[in-house]
Length: 125
Image (spheres, rainbow, N blue to C red):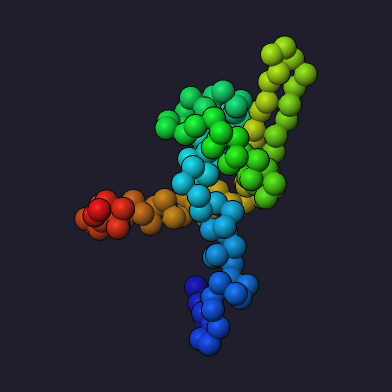
């Protein structure tokens, strides 16, 4: 794997960094669970209320905010059906589908670390 050097004499937050770019899009607490549930759903599509039930602990306001941001960043698509009551479905956009293999790799890496007894800083506090 080719390594990309970090800037030595610049602030990393002031230079274009692909990892920071990706983390800006998906790095929020609730976005990964939302993406996992959509990706795992039949036809990779979930209605808003289904997501609200599956993502335990998220508020309606936060779910709406995350969904809007993921849609703005072209990771998911939103389809509103003209029914009564209105039905809204979310699915992975092409950009989101290309993201899933990378997230699966991170998942496998973390799974190996957990099996090896590694603890995260979150679990140490």
